[in-house]
Length: 387
Image 1 (cartoon, helix red, strand yellow):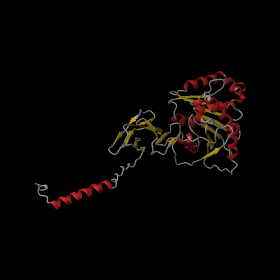
Image 2 (cartoon, rainbow, N blue to C red; image 1 turned 90 degrees about the vertical axis):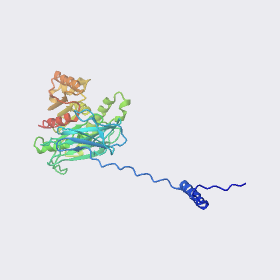
Image 3 (cartoon, rainbow, N blue to C red; image 1 turned 30 degrees about the horizontal axis):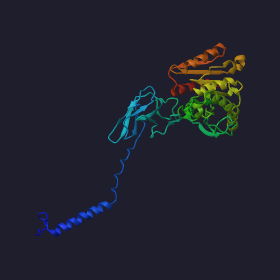
Image 4 (tube, rainbow, N blue to C red; image 1 turned 180 degrees about the horizontal axis):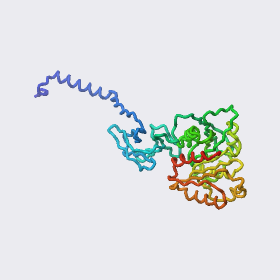
């Protein structure tokens, strides 16, 4: 005997059929429906970094929501600073108060070293660094002040002594007129290893230092030439045991045979040795000593800051000034910090000068191999030059 078909309690056959039809339709729709629209990514907050406050504190910020650990590294006299993350993924840290000066720093994000993406002031190097300034009251000499300003010209030139075209920055003083008959003394200002021709402006603020010195009547208006100090491509240094020697030799040839004539053709540069100086820091300090003392017919004023000072063949390299005191520079200025790793090397060179009867101004100051030391040395040298 056939038993009647059973339906769920309370459901009629027509209702059950309709329910099954709707269920099948829902399955078919779900199989053909488009993927759900993904949620919009969380918008990064607006970031101000670094923020220097009136009480000389500085706050650093960076948006890194997936990072596990972030620090601020490289601030002079401070250990690495741990940053804390808020609920939005924004990391921050505050330091200070800091003394008025120009500082550099980088971020370490889970071990990756990066510059601050919100800081437009950058020092270009193998590992570039971000910069910030804590202003002084009264302003420090390296600050931009309300005085007449010179102009920094950035040019490029080719040279047979260089592996590629090079840049050079040339500072001309306030009131400089290329059509006038006035001739200006010239300073060749050299940077350190790994830097570029912009270093003395970006990190050294040399143009503002010179603006302020001229405004205060402490130096006369002058032209300052800041060339690129790596005529041999710096990328080759790892494959050349004698990189420094070859680079310095090429720098000497380029500066003497190419750059000086280029400057004197294009600017109102006084061509006399008594109106020409050369000075530099670290690698550039060593280059300044070798080029300046090796060419007494070109330079009467020679300076070196934390220099990679000459260590061998000095009697031969500087034979002219050893034999003839009349060829020695009017000023030979050498400065180095007490904590500088090149202190002993500079001391040895200073002692050699003394043994040869060559007079020099010898300055040992606080500090290490760092820009605050070199920014302080620059006005000391310039105030003695061309006197």
